[in-house]
Image 1 (cartoon, helix red, strand yellow):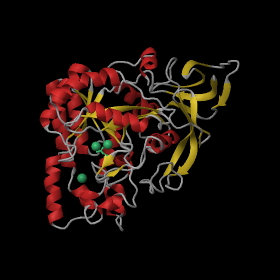
Image 2 (tube, helix red, strand yellow):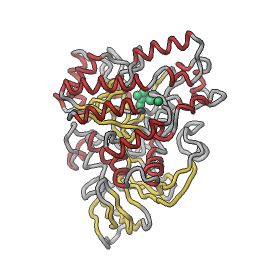
Image 3 (cartoon, protein in one colour):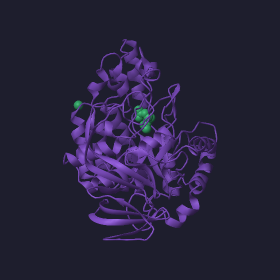
Image 4 (tube, protein in one colour):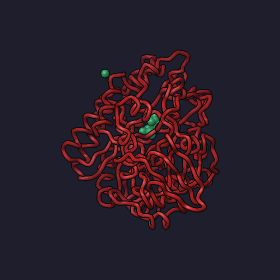
Length: 472
Ligand code: URP
Ligand code: ZN
Ligand code: ZN
Ligand code: ZN
């Protein structure tokens, strides 16, 4: 059915203007003043912003980790995402050494297909490079539309790849049109520091942070940047947490390297002291990289403002406190890493960023949606408000104030890392390809309505026709 969104303030990465929006067949059909259309359903957006739907480039839904599985799956996770103003997620498909990557991709399709309520795509982990892997990559790009590849420089003996793998992935990505993503921490040094800590009986959650100091992130980030320059390739550094890493990305960009950086809400508003909470509650705040000393937050905010960092991911990887985070009582290395953020990513950036005057409204849209669409082959089909684009839209009330809490969130876990934090501004209605998923703060979507999106190669645009042909 046609919909006419009236009287809203449309915000894109470059413009803010009052206009009406006509939606037809899931796409934006026209934008202008005083639009009318017979038979269209009217939606009043007076006093509200209309943003392009958020794109979360970094989620781990139903992902096996540390002997357990992240609790939010493609259903609860994407419902929570939609409540928070996100209309597309790109999830990390983990691969296993020695096994065809296609079988991992099939596994990810199986767990997402009839569950997701918003559109989604996959990144693919590269854990090793050999002839079989090299033979599969072109097919993964052409047939699956997976155009971004993740290499872990940490998690020794689990996900960690060596430098040869990273370098050859960079070379291959350059050749074939992929974007290489790195989890940049020096896993070998962390392994040593961790063993030393455990030997000394240092088992509390805070030692998770103290055994992976900013230097190990800075070193790995710098190494990845240098290898990218050498390969003349392209790199996206996920979950940047500290000044040491920001400096390396900024330096690489100054040299003209094609390097991009993402941070996450937790690094912008939480700090390392959270890991010292009593009664093992510090485990709720265990991420890799870890939360940092507070002074790093200013560096991250400045980097978002001046463009040294360009995107915000959630790194959604949620575990219950009871029964999951608790696996690490008496040994911090057994605490599953990650937290529930998918729902509050957009709100936190709006409230702490735009409301506090740290970034502009248009930068906020760029950081949560447009730049991500451009980097990951979704633009201009997604990530903007333009004629012909998917009608993935957020109607946002900037006046609402609310307190983040596990009592009211929609994620499937028993705590919220931002419990008690006050935020201003809230998505009230969210549309995915022209259909309401959230309407007046109620979920009205349906399980399985989200489509898998095949993405364009790095640096290329996703056209409407291609999107029709390749959504499955
Ligand atoms: O602590 C984190 N970040 N957990 C998720 C896995 C990863 O490294 O991104
Ligand atoms: Zn990571
Ligand atoms: Zn410091
Ligand atoms: Zn992650």
